[in-house]
Figure (cartoon, rainbow, N blue to C red):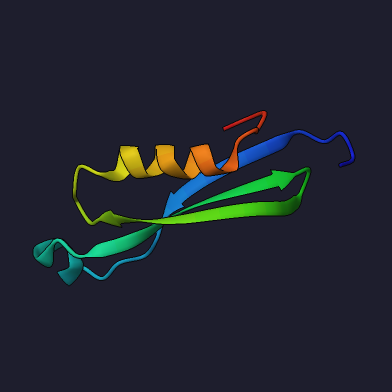
Length: 70
C-alpha cells in the first residue's frame, strides 16, 4: 500500500417506486478506496423503506475494516 488513507463509502442501490409498495430488496454497497483507487468492496441486501439498513451497513463495514475514514 502507498500510505494513502483508506476511505469507506456506503450507498444503497437504485430501486423503482413499486419496490416500496412490495417491500422488495435493493443493494447496499460499501467501497474502500486507497487514495483514489478502489481496493475492496462488499455488497448486502436491504428492504426498501425497511428497518434493516443500519444493520446491513454495519455488516458491510465489518467486512471491510480496517479503514481510516467512513
